[in-house]
Image (cartoon, rainbow over all chains, first blue to last red; front, side, top):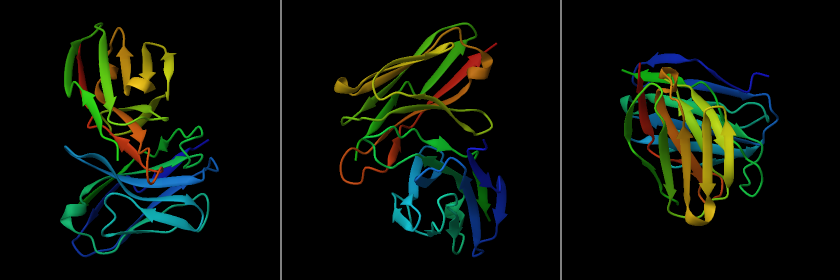
Length: 116
Length: 111
């Protein structure tokens, strides 16, 4: 059982380039999300999805797009990379987004992105 | 949204010592997790503990939801326990789909 798989693990981009961070889960989880982790800022939510075809913005969505065409995949797109997007990105999934139910979150291994 | 405060921010221990990490919430929570971020950056699930007490080997956690805090106990610490420990809980009003993290406790266990 692979859990949550993120690719790539490391990436260097030039300012203005675009790229997609991939996230896949094999647990049939409804809820998926993307966080970024910056020194002194903890983890902040970028975008989330409560199911295929449904996405919403989190705390820091600017500069990022997401889509959820399948239950398994939740890619994060950087449209025009900026140095401020240098960060470590984590994808997470849980069975459901309803906090009234058992919703333990599982995280991928992270993608370390540097924008120069 | 809720605020999550962790203490202490930094902790240095000698191998074999015990420690207690604390997580306070500004609002009630019905879902709380503890994570360990190892030196390689991986986020490892430690406990899913909305209330009560759980134990896993040398680690245990207690959440008192009515008093808005959770504690993580590490006994007989080992150098491999080093890293950052995060607690996280949901925003309990409005959008109920965001997991809010504390700023973490940086633990260093010395041999």
